[in-house]
Length: 379
Image 1 (cartoon, one colour):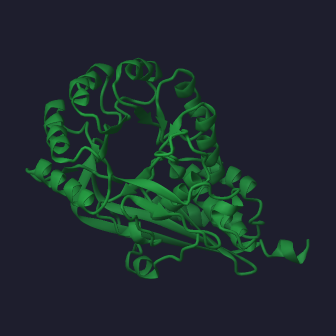
Image 2: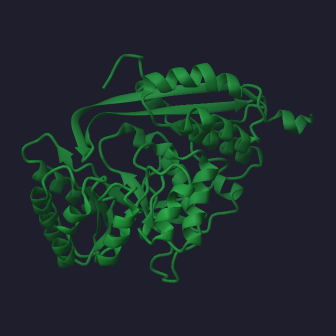
């Protein structure tokens, strides 16, 4: 083994489970969030080269499993063997494989004095558009007024694209909320609706009349369970706006039925839900090969969102229209201190892609130290 090879031997693995209890719950059709959590991983080689990864899961089981099984497996491994390492870990815990693959990618990029984008062939896009993503429901009686005020605040701050939730209230109540919002917003603000797979086909069709009233839609996201591919194909043929979905699909093969049957317009993989960063990038490329747009889901995790930016920056344009060179990615605008873990902020709805070695950003240690999970039970 050469001295160069020894630089990549993994010598230490640090973990940082972080928890923040929300003072006021917010949520979507799946229920309310009462906390935000994340699990950071820092892998350090014998030469002192480090890389950061992120995993999102329930901390008590994730923390124990990672310490007892994954760290012993990683120690002494060659970090440049990142595909093999991610493949093995994915058989134990798929989300951990994603986080570890992020850290190993950064190590290799830093060792070559490259950014992650350079490691992947170079950024095609230097800025990426983002949309403000909301969890629209709250336990307040005036939840509609509260939601409208939140949306108004971010559009005034420069966001021109927003996503709001439906599917957690009756169709009539949700439509009152959305109609008021659309009447409030200027036409240049684009809007996506996300139902979190709450409806069947007949219920989804009840939205058609309202969708026909406005022109500034981005898409309708996951109105029905994603396994109902035939019904998605029927809906897409009749719906006046694009259909999007796929955030929980783990492998590229899970998208094939959607692509083959023309069931969606926009694929939405989430790097945290895949088997590794390279598996995630294959999903993006497959969507392009099938001729579909890709607007990735990335609500959980500031570091995962950063890797989503890198992957999107390396993706060829979906269209020849110079006004839309690349699709937007999600930007969590709800109360969540972990958004600032790796400080990067949008300006007028766009984010500059970092180009320093590795991920090009250092973590915010104040947040890490302040939010360290103490091992107590939470729900």
